[in-house]
Image (cartoon, rainbow, N blue to C red; front, side, top):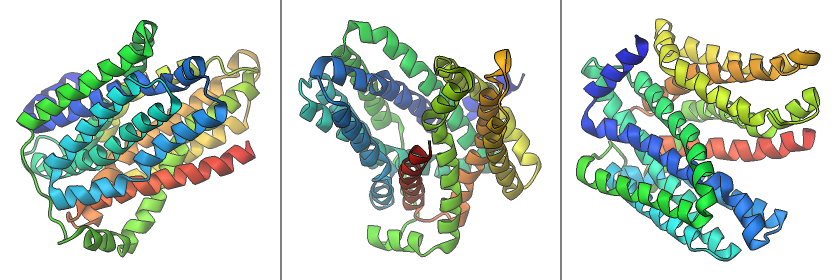
Length: 370
């Protein structure tokens, strides 16, 4: 019944908001269609070294995570729709360049374009959801935090579907897969051009003034630091979980199934948990979410033998994702409140850039510890 209820509420959303949610899904489909297979292509077809592959993938992460604040500032300055369209257009170009690449240099150019496109698009899309969320909440359709929860649901559908489609397409050639991804984003460009209204956020007179107001907001800086720990925790799926599986079972063969399990878990419970979190205050619910994440990392301290060896890792994923599903939509909603509903692009941009820096630094430290 809850799924039907959520589907009914989705249909009551304005067409532009529906398109934004579907875009978040297709954005992840196009991304995961190609990027997980980049390393294999560079190894098998371009004879790239491990160091070069690591450098190129790191460059993609930096061009996205490290530059979110620029996309956010441009959103405040130029409006949501122009930044969305430019971000999508650059991603089309990035996949075309990657699909026609026959050298590591051209691959490097393509992945930087792919990353920078997200640095423009994501803060603009998040700002659009924050602005639309206020109107949707006033209309009684759903709260803004529930809209962010629905966004997380659609994003996870794309993250689950993309690699599956990519695995099917990759046999036809890496280049064809890139062109399919480019086609998806070309479709998104046309649909956004026609259907997304022009919206300007309440912002300062210049990007630098907006950045200054964000960086002077001590409440936001403390909040962003705390929020970043959730991203650091989430990243341990890719960094620490393979090591933990190897420690418990002698190999990491179950890793792929773990990711499938966590995706199904999120798709099933994201919206119900977001609704339940409204039964208490946002502050208490966010604290509960982060407490569940913390508890998840205590579980593997008690390894089990034999058939039960995977239980701690599964329990860690359950607690980690349950905490994320409760805390993250509420936190994204709270950013607008902390920022006084002004300079939203800059606030969301800096929030994600801080998270990217924290993930990078923590990965170095955790990697050394592992």
